[in-house]
Length: 373
Image (cartoon, rainbow, N blue to C red; front, side):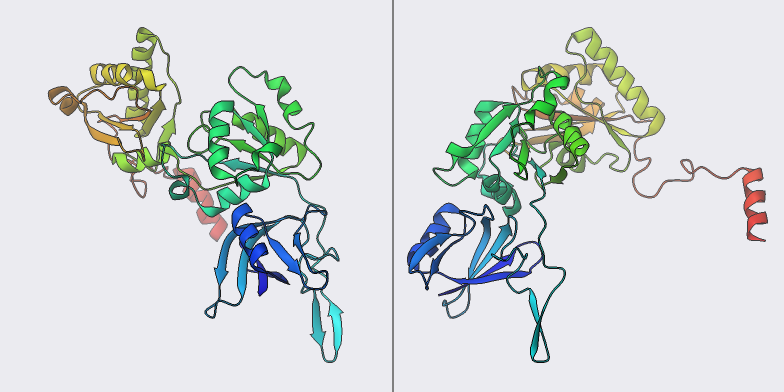
């Protein structure tokens, strides 16, 4: 049956080929386009020799179920002539003319930023198709933890495709001076990816060093959509979502932690901002206890734990309520903590109030008036 290959992002028709049952089933099994050559009487995998693979994002059948539509991510040129699309000629009267914009340059190097589900849930429910397309098209991954990376890739790639995967470690112990070496043995034009431990990469993890190196090398950085615990917690907190600051980890020792909490509350009071922080899961209860103890009764506290997981718990209330109605311990649940001082609560939510606007001085008003005249 006819098989039409279409760019999944732009909708551009790239090529027309044919499939038999075996090619159709191989495409479904591997996630890469396979076709049947009627002239040669044999199966062929698109890009097997040229490297111009077609990664299938979605497969559709027409109403008569006799034509296949492959919505794909095209690596390189779709046409054997080197054109982006096989439909590179236009009909002008009775003559054919080549379209000047169809030539495909050498494959552009790309660094994908691959998100990972926050909880142990079916990854198809947590991540969009574009993420899986990038995971399938990439063999070189920069990861923080090798074990968890293999676990994710085994769920996100076709069975039997892990043999070509190469992992390189970038964690808190990596010497920043060694980051360029992570890119050195990647073949020219081959995509590479930063894989998060959970949620979006490069926020509160060392992946940002790899992104900076990619920019230095002129590699295009492509962030992909996925869950963000910070944004989910902020949205669910009822706190100021227009003015907020992420402070990452605070000191682990008790006295240093309590001083940092007081400083964050004071900053929130001065600015009206929501202050967000995180902690390693085994300190979730200790940090919660110190927040409830140190913060003023009118300050709002939100703890968003196990986001998107079966044990998800989100509580947002004034500290006075946390004290009168203590929360059941969170245990070792991963959590995001947000605070907003009662002195700044509500300020900055929506259009800035008159208290926040910087009104022009008399000299500035006179200057503007003279400019208009």
